[in-house]
Amino acid sequence: SIPSLLFLSWISFIILALCSPPSTLEHTRNSHYCEFAMATIFVDDAGTTLPTGCYPVMLTPFSEDGTSVDHGCLAALTEWYIASGNSGLFTVAQSSEMYSLTPQERLECARTVTATAAGRCPVLASGTFDGTVEEQASFVVDMAKECDVVVVLVSMIAAEDESDAVWMEKCLKLVELTPGVRLGLYECPAPYHRLLTADMLCQLAATQRFSFIKDTSRQNDIISAKIAALTAMPTAHPLRWYNGNVTTLHHSLTAGSHGYGGVSANFYPWVHVWLVENWSKHPEQAKKVQRFLTVAEATVKTKYPASAKVYLALNYPEFKIQPKCRVRAFDFLPEDLEKLRELFLMMRDVCAEHGITPVSPPAYNGDGASEHPRGTSNTKSSVADGDTTVFPVD
Image 1 (spheres, rainbow, N blue to C red):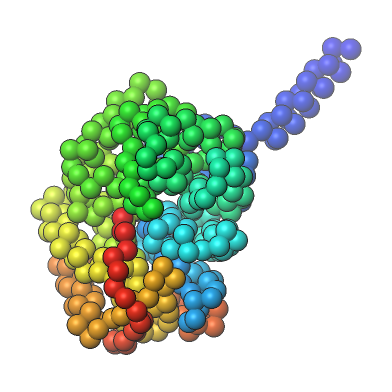
Image 2 (cartoon, one colour):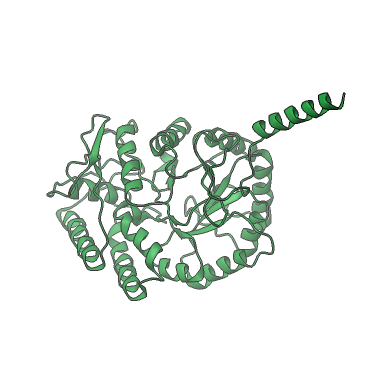
């Protein structure tokens, strides 16, 4: 009968609605279910998948002997990044010493950060390491179960001597093999530095699969060209552009970028957050803040990423992060420690001048449990042994 057919049609509609994950761009300011992800994807007022702001490339804290990841400290770091006002988190990145992590450790780090963030911000993690495109795709699908956006490492898709055409062919194959996974891009400078052209970015944006790029062009004219090309695309897309280089941050903001995702966010992330949010509201103050970030970067990058861990332990002694790094060992001389201490004091002066509020990490005792954030305290030295080989940073 007609009533029976109408009833069956209505039931079928309800089942279809419940079982179908919503489109990435479908609803403004609603969370979206990802076919693979355990966490929440965020949608801002513009209807795109990731909010404007800062995405620190997270440190990976290790045990004192470096044999295991200190997940209690990683959870405490996650709380600190969020309390500092960051819009999202990028774990399993270059700063995370991702190439020195086992595949299982990469998944576990993403899982810890996602569980700790608990839907308060999106979590990104790298997913393309050694192997064929098919093997990379398999790990991307595994990583997508642990985070919101899986980041494609540009330097791991094709060999250094392979052309951009070959690179694009392989990347599009990866996209095809990972249906439903939200993807990002990172122009990681290791094992070699490959930059995507503006045309390549637009081609990837047109797939509607990429939500994020951490750009490491480090040059104002190239940055402007990339952002302009993405903005001029005739069809709306979710790809948002974030600067991985702090020296060009202010320029990129004026050119239309969506934020920052560089290494000094492991030292004083609230400063970058302030700049991204206030560069147009307070232009003269913003220039002074940018000047501090530019000059301070030389100290930040010296013996990085150990410098970030030593900086935190030195200036927040109740936050007991080990200085241990797997990428190599570093020797911190008294002069190095003095520079890191002076950097901290200079940062506080800049914050006081411009009304920026610093955020101390939670107290962490190395026992797997962290306490609530607290005020700053006195100096404590942290020293690691070894050479001072340059670590490729961006």
